[in-house]
Length: 195
Length: 263
Image (cartoon, rainbow over the protein chains, first blue to last red):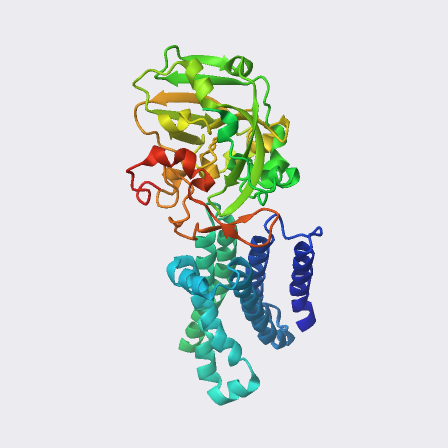
């Protein structure tokens, strides 16, 4: 799974290397922009995959899926890191003053960076040791922050688009379905308990 | 003024952008919002016959056939820097005639203060117009003195060839000291007026795209800085120059204006 999840990153790194050397590549006429968009897309894909594990399990009864949830979440975090790194290193050329200035000044970067900051403790506490240390209930409560990460990530995506909002809109619908499933399950569970 | 002198040939580090990049990476929402869309979709545009309606404050409003409008005006080659509001740039050898020469032919009335340019509206030929991403048709405008400036070009070609459809064929505007979106493409109407016209991007997002849209490294776009730009084909960024490097020729047009407010 790790290897599979890392494949897009390896592919992108290879394309970047080719672009750098002036060879044909798939990152477009502005390779830095292309890489920013690609790493952002992979972040949102892995976030969606992470959040799809539980509904899929409940729908199909394939409980073995649960094993992959942590890896998928960590991959989302990994791509978020490469997304941020691409912006800081390749786009702003590691002018850290400018990076800080931009992240504080532009609303779409404020929310994007906040989403990344929120992912940080989730990635750190993803180990079995931390689950034990925090206890299931507290760990669950902390990791509910992923919903905030998704919301902020979608706002970041939405605000970053010039005029054509169809891509962020499509992802918002995907997450709406994933959230609605959970809300519906919660209602059903409460009703069953009430009986 | 001598056109060759005003041409401002790019310095040695300003290499002309590859033809393939200049014709394969375009913002032309009439053919789709991705930069590869115009090249893929603009084949459906028929550029002949073409006519341009001249309306408003001119001596004789009329519809001109493309060839009549440009008759007697020999296209000149001008190598201009092209700066997109999105912070990428190119260097393009355009073929065109000074807009001033065309306007003189149209005989504007002394009351005319602005020139408005309208792009073709025909969703059959321009599939992007089937989406409501912008209010159609696309409209851009210049103040009269900007329109009459010898750098302002009515373009019919690039790289020694006829203008490709995705670059605004058969007739487009190029104002090298302004962001690219000011350069109306596939022009079907020229209107002279005494009131500042509403322009498409300014109406769509007034806080992001001003009427003047002069290239200005000191006035940020709300979502990014305009201080630097990335030349298509290069990896690093370079500094953006005031008025895109044409300050010596055009800064006087804006003497006394607050360029932060009139961005």
